Length: 504
Image (cartoon, rainbow, N blue to C red; front, side, top):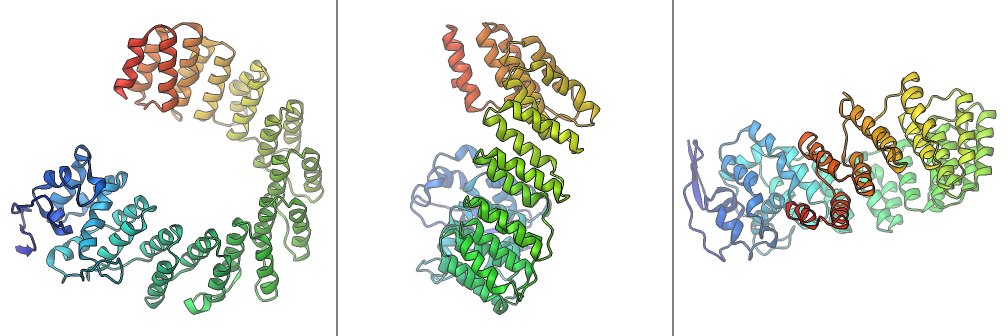
């Protein structure tokens, strides 16, 4: 089978006739996909798109994609998800479409050309996951995203999915292209593709742009989109307004519809979070009472939101009052509540109160989890109670059936390094390296490297770095590179300090 396309031919073997492309030529999508002169395009495409400059070494996956697109293979295209890591592939698609774009959509003078077999083949085998990946990469470049969207959509073999439309709506709204967003929503309405998820994105983007009245108007027009005004849709609007700090406007909507739409506990939790967000905690506490008046029972989330707000303001006597109220109402605080309180007390350096809240938690029967123990171990390390922290790590956590994670090990290692207990820290590191469930990360080694410079034992440095890079295949971050360079320079090993820079 042989089919012809503008600019070249392709056969069932995927052989492509060589094209002659000169610098300054207009390059269409078909040229980009079906030419053998790709190296020229990559290295000499400054006139077409600046994003192609100096990227010839990173184009191998895209060239492979282009070479294989003429003989579609689903397994190969599925592997094209690697393209998501680079914007160049997305811009390649958008550049090609922009040469053929409809002026009513993208603003170009040229009209779309007739569809050819090449476009049909590409559309037929173009994986939706790759399209969505393009949208993720182009979330801050609405023009390129819209170009890719229109190019794929223009092929008759392609069936648009609601998910791709929703992502395009979200991108346009994020970039404040409200008129284009509304036009796309109208298209979706004609195709009966609008869902509550679409409406949620539209309302959130309007609210994020400061156009909260448009968000309310969108809710008022729900029925014209074929969506009912119910508890779920109203909660979406209320949540959108509250997160945009428009709690009073959300209250107006609530008062308008509360007699017509059934309320639930989530409705009131939205207001509790909203009032706390604008630091009007008294109104949030009053909402809990209103919640009971409507037959909804406050839960641990309702109270925990208020507790978190008081903790941020360091009003800890109010926190204790809320805990007493929860106990009186038969609503037991959960481990998240206690962890929040403990971390806030530790940040305020009220370490005696930390121990009291831990005792209160244990006496209430609430079981601690890994995150709670991580925070508790870190707090004990800050006040120098290393032995108690090690007891919790070695004995209490296993006895309670709580498995440590990498952060747990990191906290213990950092604590031991801070108190110059190098051998104990290395023993914990050995336990972590032999663990089946957890593995070290860069933060695991940072305090150990720092301790090597502090104690002058730079001979351990090579082994630690070898374990990081060759054994665990970890990539050093900026802070680790900075630590190494500064530490080596201070120990008069400037030549060695240059190696990380050269390797970097």
